[in-house]
Image (tube, rainbow, N blue to C red; front, side, top):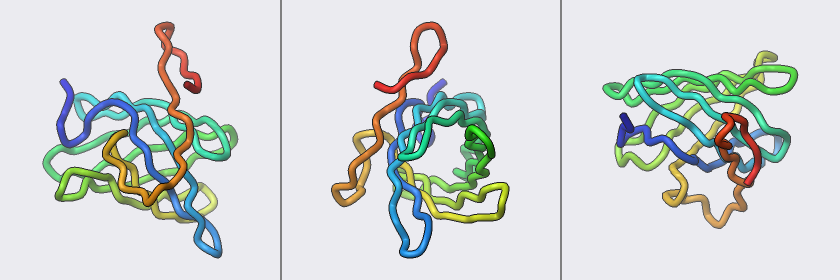
Length: 129
């Protein structure tokens, strides 16, 4: 069952890293159901797997970005207007960054160029669109 607070599909946004603070576009195709999140994402560095959980009552989500050589743990909250998830990402090395993602078509990113949308093929594999 698709949850209106956490709809399945493509979510787009950015995370902010470094000094000076730089926005890095990200696109994540997620299947969100029965309290779980799974999918695939792409940013300006690589394609990565996503898996985690969400709570409809608290509008909180926790997920892991499984990168080629490391993991990034993310914790976020769906905002009260049900537009975006805002949160913090932390790498295994302790590096932290902020992020915001929104369902595709509901982004409010000041003209930011977004990473290509990853898609799920019928054989269950992921690829870029």
